[in-house]
Image (tube, rainbow, N blue to C red; front, top):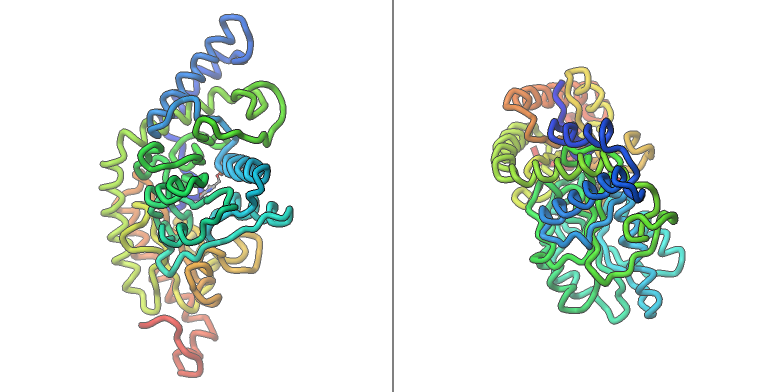
Length: 396
Ligand SMILES: *Cc1c(COP(=O)(O)O)cnc(C)c1O
């Protein structure tokens, strides 16, 4: 099997599994218990917090453990909104191609009377800091812009956007779920006030993540309960998962350069190979993109059919279109970068990890053109285009 869907989830690595086992077999006490056995779990949890903080250039008192990226996004945005509303600030700036964990939270706030302004992301999928500066108002409560897009892989100028927000005194949150463990993160240097990450996107366990919130930012609870996470997130801590996440993040951050180098080579080969398919287009910026991300649109095909046929060839990939997401609309991300509906339906996302090999890349580069031309061959629409009865939307 060639697994090329690492933006959806990654395989847990040995380091993470080995870090978890002792907290299932041995130190399985409740970190809130007062006896020494519980306190051992507490110590482990706090050491993991410090290690995660140092990977991010943050202080441990800013790290809150959550159930993952979605919860962290919800808590960051709702906290900023509630705090803003108290001061009469009900304007929030974001982008049109955020993850649904962000967009649906913003929709909820819109129904409550907040004004949500979604910035355009241009054809390359990148927001300019000037756009953010131009949109900030007296009553802006929050700017939330993702670090790297999960579909088209474009990497945003986070430090610059952070600097604009800092200068204007507006809170800045970034959904860094696709970036953590894959791109350098330095919360202090990048002017980040709040950040979300998720362990299962960097070879850690699923169902655990982090919300970072700079000291002094009051958080609103999503989960009410006990005094865990300094009273900001009720529920007995998932110590094994936290230990796995800390190990996976350290592993990823300490191998960042060599992993990036390996991924960039594979990405270049994929892009080079797939660009040769006629009437195709690369989505996202060619340079400023996640090292493992490749995303193409192929005219005249349906993403789901492409995925099913690739599955037959042992390739796990993803498409931003239709049935995969349970709706008939094409990906909001591809529409946001200006792809017409018809083109957006024929998308393919390949997301590699350092576990992929040159052979995987060769298999993909051989298989995708075969599948695309087979699907075009059985498409009545494609025949009409070839016969000149319909226009091609993408150049040869
Ligand atoms: C995966 C993902 C999330 C959600 O993270 P979970 O831990 O699965 O809840 C949020 N944002 C982005 C950009 C993602 O890729």
